[in-house]
Image: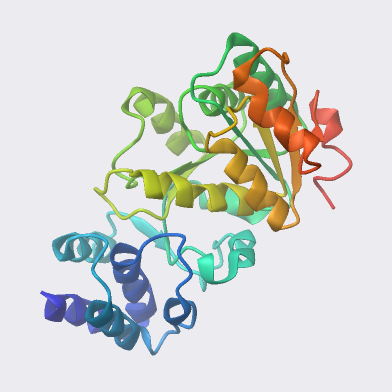
Length: 294
């Protein structure tokens, strides 16, 4: 089967790096530093893929690699690589943790404003009505000032921010932990379809692949790197949302957190971020205004 993979990668010299990156996105674990992949160029792709096949246990079945290469070759899915003009340069700050490739559906022009004009809003899936309201107000007001809103498209805070952005005639960007053809969560399929029509959906996960815990964790670095600022609106102490904030802080991005009642466990993660000096206290979009354009 590996021979079929290499044959497809080398079939079109002009697309050799793209196809090599598609294969490597399937074969490697997202978010883990991978120096050979980081040194991939337009000419050494087949060698890097062969090395990966020889030394690592594939993260995904090899047939999935073949299917991903075929879908890219026939134009079923748009795949971005770092040499493309649409590639979001904010991801380059991740160094060896930079995504190998990205699958995209929607308006790629939205990436030209990242990270400078973008704000990531994320938080608890089991959000309270207070959290939903705060996320929606923040997303609406930031959209009104020309910001791009980035979320993970999950239930709760992410969905509230995404809907508010759409309602304000904005163009949200959603980063999935699943394949581009496998909207997740399923209950937000309609919302994600709207995002595809009005905004942009991105993922580093190959087509048809389901989300996993490790892919949700890996996605946090993309959410952080795509935007100039990250705001957490409700988060438990051990939830995934604070990981986005910690990564954004490491990348020298602006980090904010919306406070909540001291009795609410849903706001504990936000309070801890503020106490640690990682996040500034956010009560409105105006609290981000001086820093998003820096």
